[in-house]
Length: 611
Image (cartoon, rainbow, N blue to C red; front, side, top):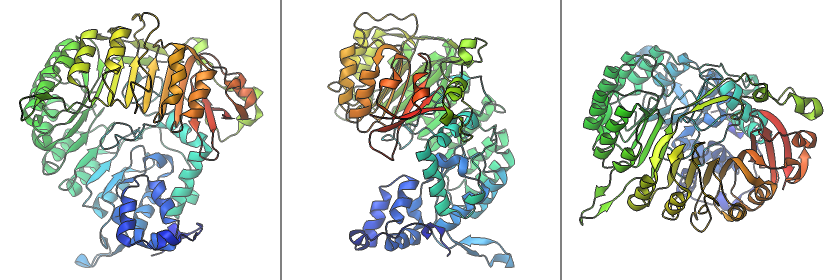
């Protein structure tokens, strides 16, 4: 096999690695989830390359989502051929191909919008034993999702966490203007993507990082995929595609034997309640994870969900809808005794306290009760619309005019910033009673996200946080009419949250001394601070310098003077022109220790600093 993985890479001497037994090498590779890191491992010496290529299953799961804007039909199959060589098939005298042995059976193509429907059909016919395939319209974010509990989600300038806001300022797919901008702006990421894909594909020289604004796989191709691979599929993600009732019926029948994880969020265009009920009655008894964001679930659909999924379901992501459906949803929660991960978004009205009250607490063999809940995410109906306010349309053109280095043709136009748009937001009817109940009944929570609760106090938040020592991700967005007494929330400290990995605070008052203590978070990887006047360049510089694991930080409406953060390596003029309301994202680089890239306003390169 002509393997381009061996080309243009130094064969560095690694005597210790070369002496390892193949079984040890395979164990090492199994603990490396990232595609790029496995490529780097295979580059270390010739023997490692041979071992990894003789056992292509170690490349599974193959996650190409971070390199989505590089992956086309040709690139995809060139990579798969390198990892799973084919041979001519003699069956029926035809000229087809079959697999020589084991191959990649878990594949993530989320956001790979240059992969066409015909390629999905070919993929299904060539690899009929796929166990896992993800075809979400948007690239995955990572974070507390499926088996990625130890992974921090990626931040995309100009775009909030998936599912929090309905963004009406751009097409249904924001990949071109936002996500693609993110990957192409940072030379580290872009270079890594190009190098990694080039190492695996001979067609990369013709690849241009462009994608169609909308990626919709046709239903005929999805039917082919389900018919060919449904009997072996364990995980299937089709979020964002307009599924037909025939596809749903095929999933219900063909995938029933093994399917445990299903994501059909925002596939609402052609589906009725009857289609959802057919789906749940078919695959429900084995489902462990079900994501159905965007659907307005009827009472009968909720009843079917309760009937067929009560024994096995551990993850449930749904949209809240009206007050009556919220009450019915609470009864479903109480029946799901193994529930570990709950997300309810787009709650328009209704008492959220009832949902928290009905979260399941399973009885143990000794008569006690123990909560299995680990992830809780509650958010109301939130929308962002285009704004006619000139203040909201300010872009980085002023920065470009004053900074020649920002006029490069490689920089895409800025994507919509969170701060520039007309936001229409609802609130959550959540009280201190719910926070006290969470602290008492669910002390092992690792993820807690609360958006716009209206009737909670800072004291209750502090009491809750002191009761959650296992918390890894905490998000709190304060409703505009909710008042916190001075000094605000004081329990967000390394002493109370020793393993915190992600912190998101919007309009939450925190005293300056607590900000100063944040530099002691040893595991912090992601930070968002919005509408915090006490947050200036001193705590900002502190976390950038001392939080060694911090990967990214997003701030806005703060008092940070960006020209004072550190030594400006690039873009000094642009850094000085950053406005108070500008959304600013900083990302740690890999080229030099203590160096950060700064992106302003959702898509334009603001500069580079060294702290």
